[in-house]
Image (tube, rainbow, N blue to C red; front, top):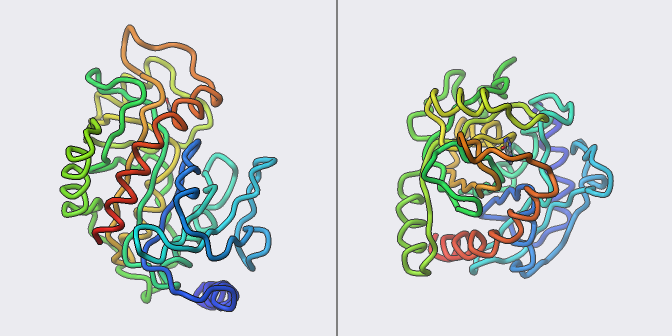
Length: 269
Ligand code: HPA
């Protein structure tokens, strides 16, 4: 595994001038943050050795290197989802690569369904904890160099970064919620009974991503910050038909606010 990662890292290093300090993973409808990056180079996933290739037509995916908030960043425009059929080890491979490229902090965004009755469509939620209902990405042989066999998850989302995000949101006049994100496999959206189940077990939102990447980053000691955009509600009385198009539409509308917070936080790192 280490050899494969080194292979990929060496290829990337021949194309970039500056080692990235910050990694960013952009969720559904949230690729617009890339427009704020002063781009040095964009590498299509299909050109990067050993990188998984997106199964979604027209969404080839790119690894973008450049400057944001005065920092060197690497952003994944297009992420990999378990429902696409990847092995977990493939899905989290880019996070391992970002670590070996030198990132010190990981930012993650996603779209999700709110199950907290206080939430509204278009709200931003700072993720302060998660429930992993997808296969754990660390199942299988452990490479001791990555980190412990049994990683602690009591501090999966960095408290200092959460505090910074809340301060910035207040300064910018942006409303933010805070809560627990539960990762499910998808690709179906939930039935009303499933939304209720997610609420009962302690979730505020439910989505199909983020948790595998955060687990792997935490195993390698990378502090994580993640934010979710509530694109639909799984709350009794408010459940309507959900479509991928609607999720994308709501996410792209709310992403300006999220981008502002991410950029402000990166500047202050
Ligand atoms: N459920 C699961 N994933 C999602 C949802 C949802 O309601 N909305 C956006 N991603």
